[in-house]
Length: 117
Image (tube, rainbow, N blue to C red; front, side):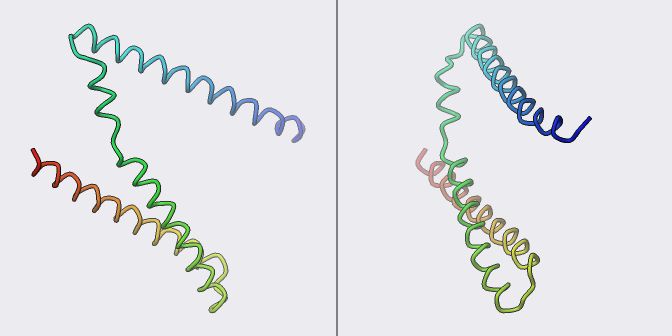
């Protein structure tokens, strides 16, 4: 096979895979809701449990950490000429700091909610 032939099919296969994944996720969500209804539970309880701010908080602090990692990596690269090493190390360090900060914020929020109850 020629490489152009393979290169055409990679996006097609990726799109088909994403569509199949979405179909199965919707199907299993529907099956989960039906099982809850059969057991006498309310599907509204499931939607309330899933609506938390921890996912967006974690993702936003990770992206902020990655952005800061790029900036610090650029300054280290320009001053010491370390090339890719400074970028990768700062991305991992600041990304980890962002995730750690999100964990600390989530723990404080959980303690505050427990005290309120």
